[in-house]
Image (cartoon, rainbow, N blue to C red; front, side, top):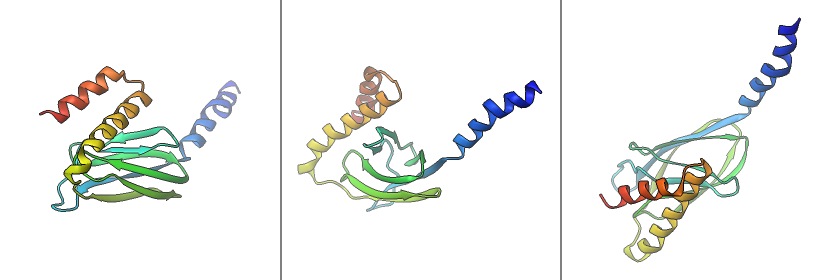
Length: 139
């Protein structure tokens, strides 16, 4: 009897919670040549969550169903904003256009700020975010 009570009170609510999350994932590529773009920031400002694309330009976000404004930013590329209504899992290729040199300076500062916010949202110290950003930028 105690086991049934434990399962009913603790395990079943956890199963219901995990089923409410959907996946928004994909790959970020250069519109000119199709190459993957790594270290791009994928950010949902209203939710204060985000991620960074990996070496293959791939990313994944787990979100509850809803409407989201997703911002994608990467060094040397124009920032892009997508409106996504998430009612089922979505996989999407996102093509980025090269940024003009005139806009590049402002964009670098903004991307750095977004990457620090993403790192802080996962309780990573800003020093590590700075180190990660500086190593990726100045190689």
